Image (cartoon, rainbow, N blue to C red; front, side, top):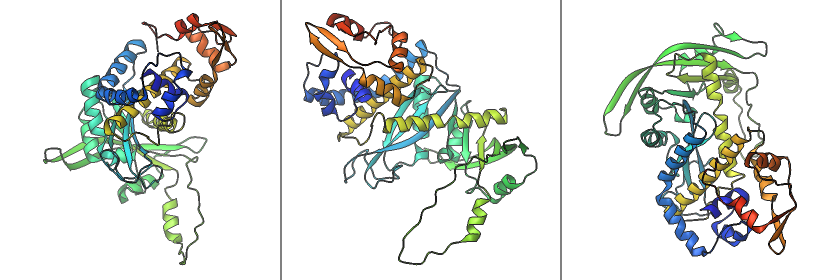
Length: 404
């Protein structure tokens, strides 16, 4: 497990690549490649237990702010054509036609991942929220958390569940996909409070009527006291135009474009926490960028996809290893006061190597500002030129009271 986590952080690739490069680390690797794959099956058995254990250690060492939690879903692809088990064809975030697996990730208010759960690739994003929340609230005891997510999770069933669990929700809501009454309210310029930069906002109390079928087949009807916060930002994201080459003549609907452009820059956030100030609601929702950035880290620096294993238990183990790696780098960033990006930290650490000179003496040939900061935190002198082998083994050996 240590070998696979270190490899995922410093030299990501397949499990075979990690095994082939095992001599990079001061680890006892007296096992075979077959043992590695057998180990994956064993790791999968402890996926949920390990998430809980890590959570408890983080609470003890750092404290964990779960007053607000962020949730989002992404998917990861495989280099295969046929689907099976978790690997199903669905709506790929990267527009790939092959099978994918969905992963829901829950993150605390400090940007530290809390837990994850895998779902079949054809699972709708909105159906993934309640299973992971029910598990986490039962195991982690975080019943009062406000859950923040985007409009893809904003369903009647999700809103009802969160509104009745003492925490609540902060969701975005589509303006263009809203009803005529909402669109009229958004465009009505009265009551907006505007600042010098052109940013403006307003809010109102609203009763949301929900009706859905629960897991037992019963129809649930309820009313939720909701607050709608509308704001306009002149720095909204504009879509990029694309020139298409087509055999048939394309007709441009200027009237539809004019109607659509009315809503450029307007955003709606809905919450059952009508006791909260508009600024708190807007700022809380904007924190969702951190989980989106976390997904980018998993797909770039950690190279979580494509996934090279095929058995379902080993797929589960692969994502467990990636999750552990992600938590470690986020904790390291937290200890470094978030002054360096994930990419910069991992790049520096991957270059921090030593070479055996002779008689158990190793020579170091790299250090930089990142490793200097890490060295101060963990009392390691990365700037030293030579080190004796016993000293190195003492440095890298995990300590009982390690604070990461």
